[in-house]
Image (cartoon, rainbow, N blue to C red; front, side, top):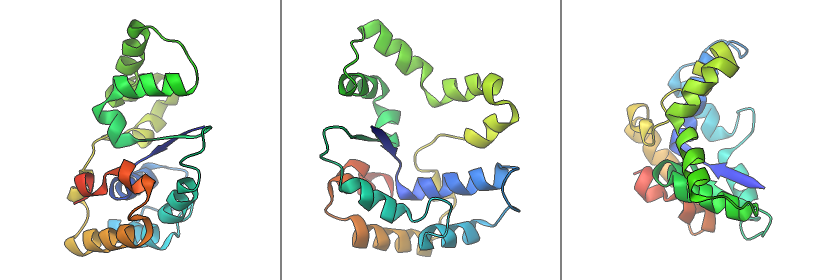
Amino acid sequence: MLVVFRNPKDTAVSFYHFSNKNPGLPTPESWDAIYSEFMSGDVVWGSYFDHALAWEKRIDDPNVMIVTYEYLKENLSEGVRQVSKFFNFTLSEEQILTIARESTFNAMKESSKGSHGQMSDVFFRKGEVGDWKNHFSEAQSKEMDDEFEKRLAGTKLAAKLKYNLYCK
């Protein structure tokens, strides 16, 4: 099983925009309201931190590969190589590079316009790492930092997430 994690701050921001752009969801909410729900785990999938801790228990399972969105943004070709190896796929270097080229955020956003129609803009917004800095107040950032430290510090998943690099 392949599991892709994103840092919690950008995950919260992504959920905020997804929720407010999705016509199938209730009335749009403010950033502060969504942030509070995210921190309390009162969102459709539950607590980010509970979810992360559940996967932490499986991080050494040979049938589970956990990779981060941030890693893929920085090292997409290498990520494709690692995923193909995990699934025992034999790919040529040319195939790896083609998959990486077609799997960039912009390429997927563009190709989704034909397959997802108006929902394309719901599923694909910016795709940037660090957009949380445009939404979080200083107090919200500190609260998230404290919660991450309390719940995930010292775990293997925390090391993969590189919280201090992407969220400080």
